[in-house]
Amino acid sequence: MVHDPSSQPRLSPTSDTEDMTMLLAPRLAHFAGVARTEHVTRAAQELQVPQSTLSRAMARLEQDLGVDLFARHGRTVSLTPAGRTFLTHVERALTEIERAADEVRADADPTSGKVAFGFLHTMGAETVPALIQAFRLDHPRVRFSLVQTYGEAMLEKLRAGELDLCLTSPVPDAPDLVARRLDEQKLRLVVPVDHRLATRRRIRLAEAAEEAFVTLEPGYGLRRITDDLCKEAGFKPRVAFEGEEAETLRGLVAAGLGVALLPPPAFPRPGVVELTVTAPRAAREIGVAWLDGRPDTPPVAAFKRFLLSRRGSLLP
Image 1: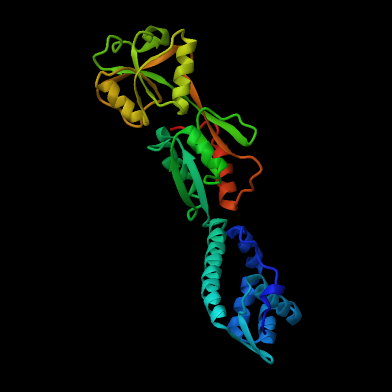
Image 2: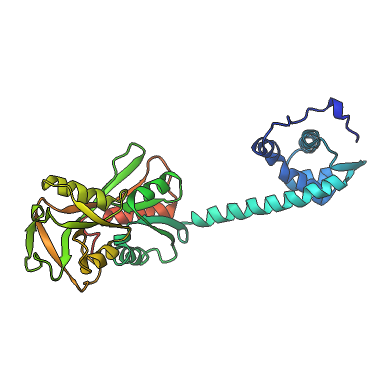
């Protein structure tokens, strides 16, 4: 079979890799079947397609590539040098496709699939381990891919398809997301143990208006809540240090570098005193969020139901 290059449609030099992939992908398994059997009839039987369909597909594949992949010998065929080169890469591609199919099927398995779950740093020590432990009592083989980060980053990962669900605060209100309030966590004003307010048990936030604050960086939900609560108390916090993790902020408070509004610690921290804020009401809502309209795999659906069943009892 000889091709006249002048009579064949060729891809434009400006065609990109994606165009070629879309053009070739449906025919790759058929090509590999013919190459393996070196017989179009037998390949058609194995692939369960009409022989005429397979013959036309191979002819079109050669036409699209602009090279001869097979030498015809009656009912049999053999690979040309170009065909052997192409087969090497096609087999690799088909192997990767098979691996990808196996992986997504495994991730969606009802009993042993995977949940990509994001959560706030402050929930990593106790809340999330306890949740997963309780969930796995009934789903012992479900796997988790855990991402611990701040709220805005988690929502970006949800939208990018990197997360199935996330625990975050504040509870997001966005048209492309579904969010459900699960619980509420009180915030405390944390002061150094030798601070002038350290002997108090309760405090109005306005009493700390002149203090230096240590806070999370902008973009963190707790930073936004801190700014809003201070504004409600009648002042703008004077920020001395910004960090990325609540326990680091507690360390800065213990070192006398400022005060902070923080959720309760997983374990008592020496060097600080935690005061109940009586006004304004200092608390943050914790909720679960997911991308609207995205279908759930069975393990994701099961974990979502479990989280929603924990409304009001999420936090230890």
